[in-house]
Length: 262
Length: 259
Image (cartoon, rainbow over all chains, first blue to last red; front, side):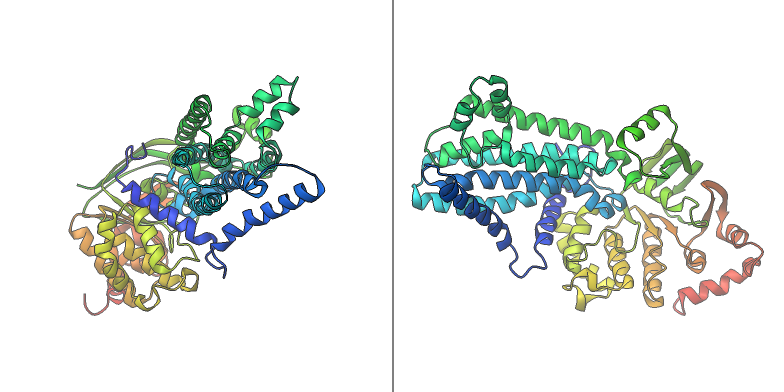
């Protein structure tokens, strides 16, 4: 898929770039990678506090419920925003070395996926202790890969767009802020269904959000110990594949002029 | 055999004098009302393996644009580029080195992006470091390196790629005499083995010492293309190099006693 017309050892180039992105983020911090764990835990604590003491709610395992929303959301946002600026941030490489450039947004998404993987590991540990493990967990890698594909496609588009219009970055950042409220992080799908009764259009829009579907699947598997459903899986796969296809096609179409605008 | 053939190559940039809204820019682009700037106009030449060609010209003559197009990082507006052979380009001092990564980490990344395979790099790593002469500092972050160290490491990676086309943009102007001599020897070795070398430098001593042929770019056009002894004196003009024979002592000082 990536090797078209290239003499490169593409896999090696991709792992090197990913390793670079991963190392660079926390290189000069004394706490290093612990920061990627600190952020979700802080958000979880604040939300737990607010939704336990200020606004009552009766959800079971509420902190875990929150984490299952925060972690996929955080990964999505970080991967998308760093993916968006990946080409402009790596202008020196893109301008001066001839290599398959789609590797740059990919590497930036994958580096974030590594952080996500560590966070998910800890989430699984906590879930295993509190609720207990289940065979359904084997579905998680599928959801994980689909989410990576979806964000990669989006990032390819926005990264290319950001080269020509640097405003893209701020559009993406604003979009992620909006998403925090539109995606069921501190509420559940059941609540959406209740709230949107009579507004079937709104419900359709919300239910076609791939990020929301990802969170839905993760909660079903980890929290409720149930299989999600085939229709969600098919929709999610379709969304991820088309995102990837559109992203690659668009990126390839416009990438030859990148050097002019960097 | 390695070859670079350019046919009637032109490159146009658009100049944006002031900040514009997205819609304005798209509108202007559609109306073709943007102000064009031609960095290259109708450039044609052919360079073959075994040749070392120097490219000279004043600032803004289009040298770097030309090298970027030949290296494949930029695309021409019109015209044709034919390129056969593996390209090793050092288009800038310390090409894309990340300041927070160590010299070793940067070497790995650079080599991987230039197209070296993992096994190849593992085999050549110690030789790359040794050639660059920064063995003691290879595990220090690149931000602590001097410009000379960066370009030495960048050059070292590029030659170890064993490229069929090597492109050097102002890389040879920053090292010291000892390293310069090593570089020239290395480039000559590659060229003798059939590599094609393109060198941009404002240091005419380097061009004189290294290149058999010189292409003089002026405002995006080829003003002169021929043997170094003919083109270089004309480029320097009525100044001190008007006598081609003066080139030879310069060659000697650059190459040193061992040549």
